[in-house]
Length: 190
Length: 156
Image (cartoon, rainbow over all chains, first blue to last red; front, side):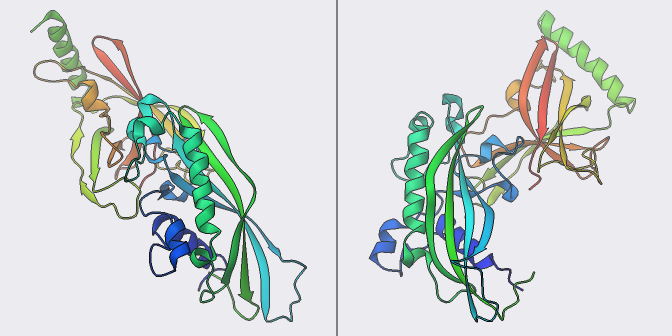
């Protein structure tokens, strides 16, 4: 049986890894989708902050940390058929820097150059954070009436920031807030 | 053979005797995986995984522990919070005519993100099926020995 956040998680995977929006969802989606192969899921779904996280799988590895769930905008009325909730999640993406780490850069197609990427790491990180926001923020890409729960919208909370872990590893951290509409008669149990 | 090569050959013979006595229970295998695309990207598939088992078996000692989601295994504690082992592997004889290993064989550098390199430690204190480790350092304390430092890695 599906859990409450399964639909949201599947949508994030579709946006970040499967080029959702590339075709069939309109011109706005086609302009803002994330190309496939640009990012990869974190190794074994674990945080890139883990001290044993392998460097070879660090660059452009993303990790979703679900941080909170709340009724929106007021505490729920359990008699209502539909429940509006806000999910807070933190999207963390790893980037490598340092000349010797150029071989670990997950180069995207086109003009991406590993040698430049490891020098301009903060510029790369924040630029891609903005591109990810553009994709997640686009209703044609993110929202869906056919999922359960319904995916309503996705917004950034505050600013995207960078965090230097040392040893040639840097994280770009963005907090998001997604709103979902769930059914009070459904059981979202594993 | 140079004098250094003869010394390395002698050191290697001594290490083989220790191994033959059954005092080195852990096998160490260097694996270089080649994928069709960057490792971890959804569309990438494994194409080959040539492996080289070091001979003789080197000494493997756990030197540190780190709290890590990639911990566990036979030495990581089966009923305790996960810890990942850091191990010292060696001494390993440097390359000489007829044996030994050079740095590229012990810790091959991935040519690009489509290659993944790791060690498999099996037997002794480690799971007989093997546990994956990643080399973090290659030390060369003398001309007759190399010592690898490796951390427990994701087991996928």
